Length: 227
Image (cartoon, rainbow, N blue to C red; front, side):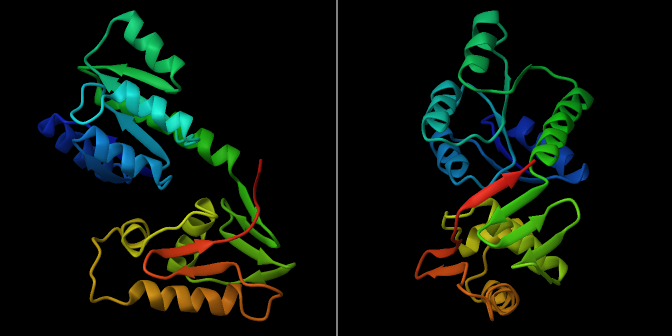
């Protein structure tokens, strides 16, 4: 599960980042609302932890914009604004939960686990054209033929599938699949995309993996999530 933290209180952000990493979650963070909006709009995250009082754009407007753009990533608001009107406004704008500061760490983890369970139960299979990915079983089938992938190839394919018809950059792939910052001298992404194409596209009726020159890669096709 990959989490985006948008929080401008740096000591708290570092505390949350370290705690989530120790709990086994992938995490990226920013202290700026405008940058957070850009990152969240990529659709690369499974959950967003959102402060409300932010520079650039406040959390309420950020959440409102995300929902108007069709980004449905679950959002948990974490804020010192504790009045009922703030809680109601945040939930009405599309947040799935609202945690008031100061908060108990175990409570935050428990609420994240609820979202994680909801995500896994609603996205057990992804179907794109004649390609089916069984997320729980980590099994890939195309045109009724099972495709055997390495662990990294599978994570890369699932990431592309979760972002079907969107362009994902090499930087995003490096961060999500290898949890590394982008190294412009490395060809690790190109190598794995090539290997994935040999297994997922070669010999089939039409290719699914597309290279967008200068921008990144995209898995093209009609997407359906089976529950």
